[in-house]
Structure formats: structure tokens, C-alpha cells
Amino acid sequence: MEKLNETLTTQLNHRTIRKFSPKPVTQNELALLFEAARHTSTSEFLQQFSILRITDPAKKEAIREISHQDYVGGNGELLIFLADLNRNYQIRKQLGKDVGRLQTTDLFFQAQNDMVLAVQNTLLAAESLGLGGVILGSINDDPKRLVEVLELPKLTYPILGLQIGHPAQEPQLKPRLPLEFTVFENDYPTEFPVEKLADYDKIVHTYYDLRDANRRVDEFTTQIASAKLDKRVTKRDDIVAALHHQGLCLE
Amino acid sequence: MEKLNETLTTQLNHRTIRKFSPKPVTQNELALLFEAARHTSTSEFLQQFSILRITDPAKKEAIREISHQDYVGGNGELLIFLADLNRNYQIRKQLGKDVGRLQTTDLFFQAQNDMVLAVQNTLLAAESLGLGGVILGSINDDPKRLVEVLELPKLTYPILGLQIGHPAQEPQLKPRLPLEFTVFENDYPTEFPVEKLADYDKIVHTYYDLRDANRRVDEFTTQIASAKLDKRVTKRDDIVAALHHQGLCLE
Image (cartoon, each protein chain N blue to C red):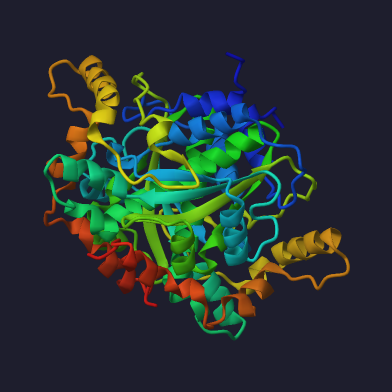
């Protein structure tokens, strides 16, 4: 196989890091991560995202409690990425315009997409520098509380966090679905027979087995059929109420 | 300044390419792009996105009409990225489980975020190979029609497209908001005085002026206060109805 370039090599070696050494991320490294975020594509040049770098111990603690993950706010840096329609609203207001389309779901999705693109660029930039990280969807475990903790104004919303630092673990590459189940030409398939996923299930099983032989190990399909996706009562479903409270997705 | 690594160099040199040469993207290049997408972070290992590679001329034409952009479906490759909760539903059904949480907004957002992360990795992989591309938010200009054209089953939704190919233009780097307006420590700012954006506005004005001296050129703040964000009737607001039609974001 031909030699991959450095970017692809970094991309194909991605693993989530959840344990970080006390060695700090330097100001120079942080500056590069923010530059990577800043240079990301943005829909219609609206630039609708912001980053909160959390250094306040009380806020770190509160976000750790919300996300139920002990590494959140620990060693390394904790960044919270916001869909930010407020900045443009503030500009419009000063120039005599109303909120316009900023409260529509369409505009919120544009902001969310901008923001998520920037998260990936930031994480990959970190990985290219020898750092590691984990994207924190878990900050959504209590959307209303998170908005309170971050004291966010209307028209801003925290979608994902990123914990970044020097890796203190070397996890195996987690095996992903083969492309035959995820990439299609023109037509989306009519079925996904579980039998066809048997080989992949074995690979996933082996991955978990090697990672921790003492824990119960799951195939991919059994995880999908597990309680993880069953209906249940969870504060994560407050997301719509929290968005509306922030004045977003109203139309 | 120290030398940047290849990944950061690629990231900081990002420009959107909207004009492509007839030189095709090779199968090998495409395969690498899909591998980059496949290795992207995925929330809770749910792997809830899919990619449609569009090669059918009739579908290309229909998507070009929807997006009102002549480069869509032209030279290069057209990829449509789907938030895909259907695959996991099909697996659950075969294993005797119901739709569970797959119709919640929470799960849709997880899928959307997974998908958008993969878009960024795919685009950057292309750029690292000397290709260029444009992320197509414009496929949302008629959400209901797009779902029809792609003949998508329930629980799938097309969020962004990507047109990738060999660049036939060399645009200038588009100047983005300085970090002082987008990155904050702990506290989101209480105001964004337009006066403070005057320097940035000048830079944006110069950028447009250099790009095309014959066109009306805008500052950033005047763009934000322009009709682009004013309230208006647009099919883009069908997005919520289209999501509900697809059985998504119901709870």
C-alpha cells in the first residue's frame, strides 16, 4: 500500500482518549487549535459558532457532574462549543434590524453544522500535535442545567464539548462498520440483514475482549438492540425545551 | 514562526472551491475519503450516518436544481451525507426490538453531529490530497423535494452535501472573525460592539474588492444586517416538516 500523507495518517489513526497526563497543553498549542477552528468552512459566511474555554474550577466541576464523566474538566483543556446566533443578532440590533431568521430551525442547523465542523477540525489539529481528545456529547445529559451553569444568553446553545490533553492511555483502534454498510451509490439500500453483519460483530467482540477481558463484551448489533437505545425517561430529552428557552428553533 | 505540520497547514489553508476541472477523482482517492469519514468519532458507537455517492445524471440534475448552484453535480464527485437512524432501526427490528429512542430529537442530533464531523474529515482528506471542495448547505433549499429525489426511507435525512474535485480556481483565503470575537474564557461576553468590528469589516471589504472589483462589496456587519438574514418565506423552513415526515425529531 502506498504511503499515506500526514493528514490521512492522523485521521485513520483516530482513537478517543479519555485519560490525560497532568502535562499541560501550551498556550501555543491552544492558539493553533483555535486557528484550526477559525479556518473551518462556515455556511453563508455567517460564522455562527463560539468556543468557551473553561478554566474556572467550579464550572469544570458542574460540567463534570452534568456529563457523568470523571475526565471532564480534569487534566488537559475543556472546551465547550456553542451554536451562536446571538453575535449576529447583536450586530443586527445595533444596525437597526430585528432578529430576522435567527430563530428558525434552518438557521440553528446552519449554526450547529458550522460548530460541529469546527469541533472536528479542532480535534484533528490536536491529534496532529500529538495530543488526544474526546468529543463530549455527554454535556447534553442535562441541557437546561448546562445552559444555567454556562450563564448563556438567548440565541446561544452548547452542543458539544471537547476534552483535550496529553494522552495517558493507548487504546486500540475501534473497528468501524465496513463501508459496504455505510456508503452507497445513488440508492439507499432497502435492507440491512443482520446476518451480513456477523463478521463485523465478531471483530467488535474481539476488540472489546482485548480491551478488557473481565468486562461483558458486546457485538455491534447487540449494542444497537440493547437498553442503550430503548425508550426511557432521560433529561437528554429536555433538549427541545432548552433550545426553545434559548429562543432557538422557534419557527 | 515555527513550521506548521502538514495537517495544520492544510487546515489553515482551507478555501472553498466552487469550480472544478474535468480531471476525475480516482477510485483510490475516493476510497481514502471514505476511510477518513469512516474513522471519524461517533457518539456512543452508534455510527449513525451514511454517504450517498451520486453518479446518476438525473439525480445530479435534480440536486443541482434544488441547490441552485451550477457546480453541484458537475465536474468532480457529489456526495450526500445522511443522518441515518434507519440502519440501527432495521437491526433492532430484526432482533425483536422497537424503534426505541431513534425518533427523539436527542438521537437525531447525535446522528447529525456524527455526520457533520465526518463531512469535515472527508473535506480535509480531499484537501490533503490536493483536491478541493465545497460543503453544500444549499441542498436544504427544498428539503421535501430532496428526500423525494433521493428516495430516502423513514429515519434517514440528508443534511449536507459535498462537491469534491480538482480545483479550477485559486481563491484567496477568506478572512474570518478574529478570535477575540469567537473564543472566550469561562464567560460569554455581554455585548459585541459594532465599532470593535470596524477593522475586521475593512479586511472583509478588501477581500471582496480583490476578488471582484466590479461587484458590490460588503463588510461583515453589513452582510449580517442584510436581507440574507431578514425574515422571509423560503422552502428552507420546510426542514421541520421534512424531518417529521421522515419520522425524526418526533419526541
